[in-house]
Image (cartoon, rainbow, N blue to C red; front, side, top):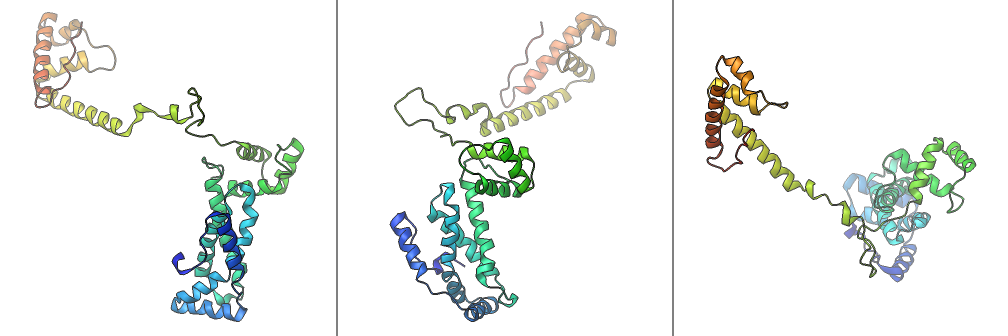
Length: 294
């Protein structure tokens, strides 16, 4: 069902909201027989006109429920819009044969949509992410005696009533009392006033740079392995022992003893192997020259 099917006054500004509320209050309620008949037409024939009449006759219910959420500082017009979405979902799922009125069935769907909207928008950082936290969030808001903090006795009493741990109540109260912080900082003339946006950016973690670095590292590793494969076994062993160990490289004398030659001969083999590697790694793409070991 599209909301284009429900021609009601637009919600924008206080005067428009008042006009909207007056308009929906003038829409006549449905009798139980009318409601059942319309529900059957929607269920059996997907009758859009039946759905429209059922929604329109219950818009005043959404307005009534939205007033219960005004304490969160969100525009009532937005609360009503979200509640209307819940109402339309309820109409779509309504079964006229179950013997209950749509008003009773729709309350759950309307509240669910408004609850989700409040949790998403009351703080930029979500203060309640799980079902249990959302339940605690709304219950604690309604049970707090005022805007002050709960003392230990009040915390224990709330925890007992809600069936949660006292530390959960304290944690949620801290989240509730946390103030909003502008990411862009103050808008006054103070040049020294900066917001979190000024220091949250991490240039080193810029995705394109990270990807380029990873690709470059992979290409260098693959190129080095390919170049090493072009060396003879002894030259490759000398280069790997001297350059590619995580710990300190082997000395010329250690390798000389291994291959039963002089240290000078090992140095000559190493120099020739390194020159070969430089040539292989420099074509066709220029790569950083290998350093010389002192």
